[in-house]
Length: 117
Image (cartoon, rainbow, N blue to C red; front, side):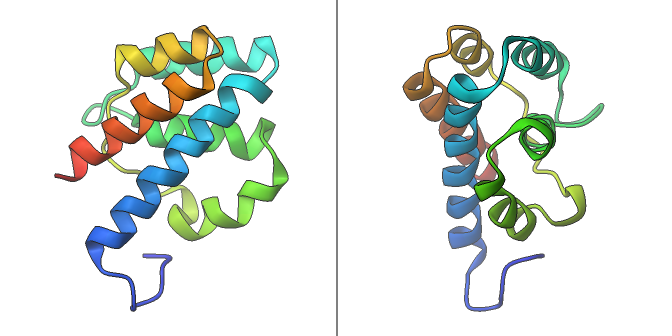
């Protein structure tokens, strides 16, 4: 895991959920339309079991198209493309499609927190 030992598993999961939510909000407002369309298509097809999960899809897209200031955090929380087994919710896909950063934040945070228990 990319985070240092002082962080418990619960703290790491909450940090990941917060960053995933912030990344989703950023994607909603900063991605160009082509990148956003590609992301929402990939998220709609993403599953936690049969392929890359929603975290991988969103983080991968932001590594390519997002704000460079997030890259160091992405690398710490998801080193080497590590994924959390999160399935994209319809609410996340819709929030991104609507370019609604608040709804994207809420849907992404909820999805990751639900998966982590």
